[in-house]
Length: 268
Image (tube, rainbow, N blue to C red):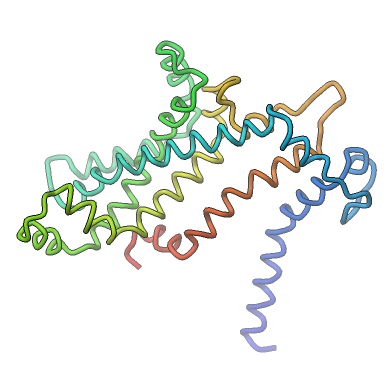
């Protein structure tokens, strides 16, 4: 057996291993609770779409997706807007304590969300932001802004400074230069940073659950509260899981060509 064939077999087995949980989740979402709990089957014997109908018609379920999308988009926009000028400053200027400040930003990303759950809860309860979309969006900025700065700084450092100087000589103001010349040059970096911000905010559970109760409760928190008097609704929970995977999969599809570059800080 040649080496390329061996590598292909290993990669195929690895991909199948990764897809088993997703297939099993899809399999459960198309079954009734009675079939899920009574027997082991590799495919639905009595295929049903009732579980998806429950999610798409019950406001307590589909509003979870709406709430999640609202605060995730808000967080992504805020994080990128704040990170762009900060990353430009770190990539273009040297000032006292710049490396220490850059490292301090990353330490916020290293801390677990549980450390900040109680302070955020008390603060937002005091100022009337509890159970709002902006509360979760701002809380996630504590983690996403440092990550976005870290990624964008690498992309910006790869752009020659001569471009900045040439634009100033040609009479461009800084805002005009930054929006019309510089940002298109790092468009892939902005896309990668937005992807990571989106993914963290979409899958984060602790802060989003702690800072919301009814009006802004995300789908991740809704999925943890599916126990009723009749027990766990496994089929609906599996369907919710499948629908939760779809937005992340779509985002990954659109930025798939830039993810590797994002991990390398734009230097590949």
